[in-house]
Image 1 (cartoon, rainbow, N blue to C red):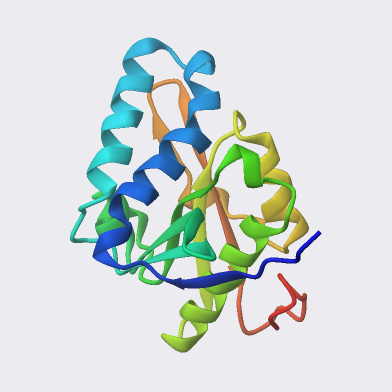
Image 2: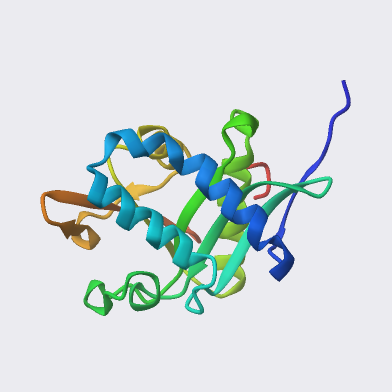
Length: 180
């Protein structure tokens, strides 16, 4: 068995279709868990994200030219969600995705590590993200990597709460993806 190396790198414009395929594959598991209207809106948000000029950086997990995962970084809550009232004026990680066939290989953790490294390079002290209880495997990953709840930054959408998490970058000594 050959050990192929997964490289976390900046996305290129030519990666857009591959990123779309990763996002569609990764998030398809949630379709049955959401009301139809909410799922349709979520899909539209994902499609919009592919060309959203507010994304500061798109990172991909590339294995020999095959994109297996991706994540986006925004620099404020206004850019990420159109919610300046959240008062997040630092990096926000969104739409972390790994294809279902590539899960269990540490790719999501490597994408988080890449996001942390990029955030530190920007001089950030904290990296934020939002998720919900439906995404339990993601929540477990974030908590294992040292993210903590930041309830004051939660987003309430009707009867749904999108929970905020953060990691204090300069205080953490936890190794994530073997990069720190």
